[in-house]
Length: 171
Image (tube, rainbow, N blue to C red):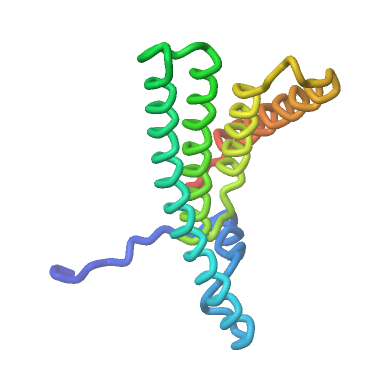
């Protein structure tokens, strides 16, 4: 009829219903005790988000200070390769903090735990570690461990991406 809107919401698929049931901290849980505990945990996660923003801002200040400090020490306005790697490490630390903040935001804003983003964050953290490694002080087993971790995280991320490409949400 004219003037009336039809409900054109498509029926939910079994995949969508499964993800709907996968709520980590539902605020409408039937048991009042757990509902209250979930609210407390959600509040704690919000506090962590605020603290993570503070860490990000502190990290940006640290990056600025590192660049300033490296540029004003003799020889002026020149960076050697160690200075560049140290600066890259500071940049990566801030970017990892941003990724963790995004993880927190997604955790609060969706009903699905963002596994792919968590693995990507871990991959970025191990990449930072590789960038700042001092190969003169490391044992071969330590380097082998870093390589195995990097490889396993890379394969895991690739597999998660492959799985997400095959998933059809509108089935």
